[in-house]
Length: 261
DNA sequence: AGTACCACCTGACGGC
DNA sequence: TGCCGTCAGGTGGTAC
Image (tube, rainbow, N blue to C red):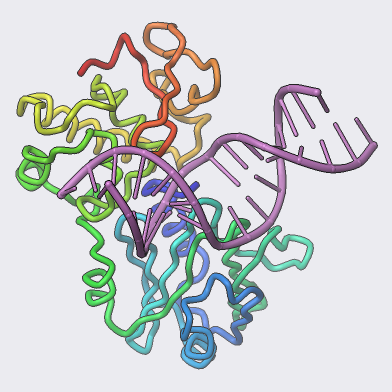
């Protein structure tokens, strides 16, 4: 599930709930989500520690500890954080649990276990090693133009490539292309600079609008395509049935009338 | 440097 | 009702 807007909402949730509290214990309920050598280190480093601040790059959420280290969350397709006090509020698939001194807990929940929890001393090295591109909300127009103007790939896959810019996944790439009026299979390098600029504007608009809505579909503007991304869904602008098509390995939805090559 | 395909996991859903 | 194939908002590896 989580793409940039969702992860940004998670980040704000952590900010609003978990900062500056002493961590009493860490329980790893399923080591599958841990990077290989990080389990022991995680428990060791976090006990008695505190979350001081958060940061985000693309779909990665970082939490700085008061001892200079960083906790790293990636949510895969089904992950999310849950802060709660009562046992009956436990999420369905908790994988790592942080227990605070005030009795509250933060669970990293992840049904499909595609996500990861990790810990590092050097966040810049982590980003460099993973080769994570500039955050999609942070990238400026000139850099965006330069990165994409000569790319040979289809625009949908270019947007989704985390090494170029990070944070856009399958669902939001559909939204961005719909807002920009660009067909997803268009080769990005054939786009004239005016359309490339519109793509940039649409990217910022779609991501920021979603964040402002707490990533809740019900709050999205009427002309967003995301709520209509279902079999037989119709274009919110022209009412025609949306095309569902596998593009670069992922199923995308688009309007064959409103989106042009 | 692309794309296509597979793998990793689990659960929901539609068809029979 | 129950079983089974399919598929899903991600990433990483392979081969071509």
